[in-house]
Length: 633
Image 1 (tube, rainbow, N blue to C red):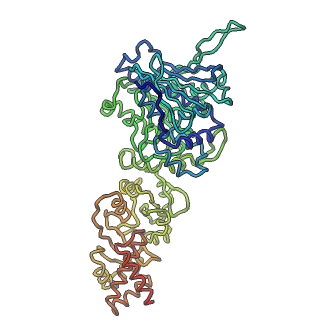
Image 2: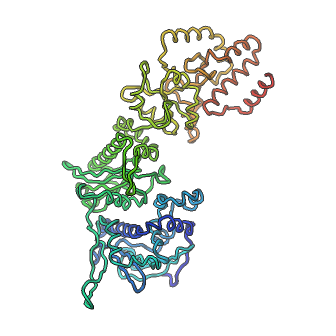
Image 3: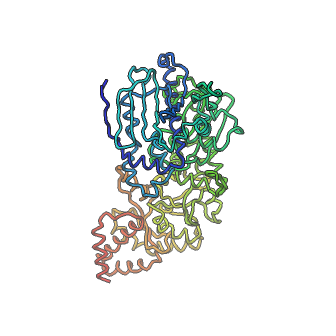
């Protein structure tokens, strides 16, 4: 054991982070107690779980609890537990690395307005550091279960912290707050009672406080339990207030923002199950990568597992909450969960309850909801979709049984108007003669709106969905249809435009008339194109490129290449607008100057690529041909 204290530098811009915490949450600084109690509760949960297989860890100290001790003379408030404790390395790693997900880089990217956003605080993972809202010095003394050594960690919220040997008779952790002068109200019994009751009444472990009782000079110190210590999800819904639901969410998620919605359920029958699932109000900064959190698994009110991925599919990784099973064994492991039939039942319930909650939100449209005690009009489902829609789409691919339900929850921008629309709404608006749901894929909204592939569709009044998320085309290819109506890409195949017999006959006539020209264009472009043909999908542009049948679209091909996949070059069809003035000029060039005809044809092909947002294979050659054309003009 080291005989002297060790100085360590924080692994983040601590001054900026702590200033952010204090400045952003100053009016809410009572939450420091919630965060420290939550951390103590987690430590007790971990010890309780380990004691199932290592009963000796409990020893003579088997009654697990959280204690709050106020010392007015010293000006300190101590939150202590007899949980799993921390070793020296864990103290350094857990308390010396602020916001382990790259705080320094994140801080540099935030605007001054964003740095003031309270909702960001929970995303930094700095719950422990909320202690500095009320304390100018924080000392942590901890002894890991099964160890004879105790260690102390101390910081004054500057650029470094100190670790030294400590003293603690038994396992567990003391967090000692040396309170600021303006925070000494938190040494009083009733302010502490009120905060615990408000934020932590449902914590399953007793939260005790030493209080003075008696009259005159006969006062004696005694321990009193401050919380009901009854799991919130086991209580009847009628007994639970909105505020309690919100605070429980903040407890399990460590998110400072209110949840968007929640579902509280109980299942009885062959399997017994209860749970409380939440949709966060906004996406965490690293939603795409799975972060520890998710759904906590309990068995008969005993904590078993954090972030139980076996009962929560990856495409619902934004869900937070708890699930409590009466049927699983207490010594359940991830290996057992992966094979257990009860786990499959629980997973099915979590999925169905979450999707039912989403359908309920989608059906309510704009509604009046309470936020921070105020009523306001909101479309909660669209808020959810903008934050988590990209993740939910993954379920269409991974969960075949849920595809019909998930398809009803999809939302896209479309050519009809600004704003998001669903497939059901699209289908209800389809005019007579339209027999497919049409979409176009593009890099962004502007690219989709100006795509040449949808010119005729828009002219005929057919709505087109804009698929601008990288995953969207995979989703459409996986679905193929929605409630019996096919999903069709405007950039694939011979698009069904609802032509009249007269329009079809006219197009076929032009195809025959232009057959020699089309053949020469094809010869000039080989092997870059599979064919050249007349189309009815264009009204303003001279040409566009389309994929045949189930071939990859240019958008999908580009995405795969960007992801590092070796994708062979796709031969596509060049479709031309027979009524465009450029075609008349090409017909004349075919008779007058074969070399210029070939150059113009190549330029037309490159122009079609550019219209899709694709850079031609020879950009320098394209620039040269354009310059030559301008000089000739």
